[in-house]
Length: 401
Image 1 (cartoon, rainbow, N blue to C red):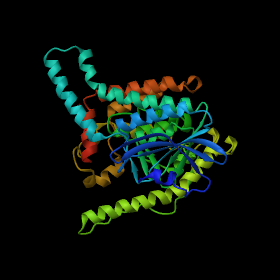
Image 2: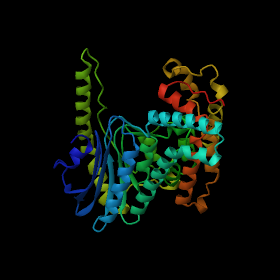
Image 3: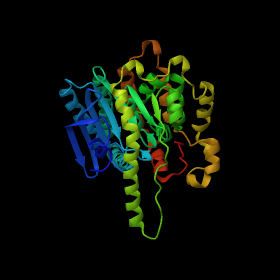
Image 4: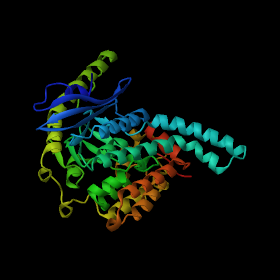
């Protein structure tokens, strides 16, 4: 078996005892498995998700997460921790944007047809059930993990490179995070026309505070491992002293592809040998030994005024009037100075959501529900398609209505 399971089910890690599967799911090259493991005299569940090449969290994978966690709850007696682990590859995406675009185009076509026949607004709204259903699954995943956290310690290992969207939100659902020194998180949704809808906003508020969450969600900028630790999202950063494999380009593309995949597999295992022991240690050590950033020590990524000033420029489509539709690679310098365009509807939704945040009366479950509902409305905004197409084609988005 390729991917993270190979290391988890080997005898390579000193002190790790594998007591067999609690749950297994596989589809094509993707899989999700949960094994009962022992470490330092304690027993827990180790969840591995693998979906190459960029580890998107598709609907089948979401279903597997929910089914697997249900099995963990059934066998909770004797389990003291849940450890989330995956591949250590360069990129971890959120949803499948090509699939979303295909579904959106079909929805818009059916919407036009129904409107011409005088269908009710309620009937037309049901056409977006594909989006609503996925959001409900994401929120159900958050609910399940947080419920498990009431009686087990939940730890996530963020190996590899940058995590976008849902691939960042899922580890954020854990109590404690171990990060690869080369890793990063990016809530890229505001550049597409959405917001983090799987509890990403709520969990960032819990871990990193209001201003840092404002920065991450509104600017959609990449936040690297060292910064993630300083703001309280990562509890520990493990130094990985080697780079990601690079794909060679020769006159034999098939051989190049095979060599690259073989290199990724070896790199995945080599990285896991550094990261997994630290994840297991964090899952089993006395809680007072877990590194944390106290609120008064937390670094602020930018001031609130600076964030709002940047967002104000980037959310205005006219800022990019000379760049609309141009390939990003052709306007690198301009985009480096301006930042990528932000979807005005995303900024508006985030402003409203963050404006409702009251730290003295914060209820995570209620906030997560509002987050989901706000994201659902954005799927229905006519500007969403522009963001999807621009992202897929790597062009400068035009968010004019």
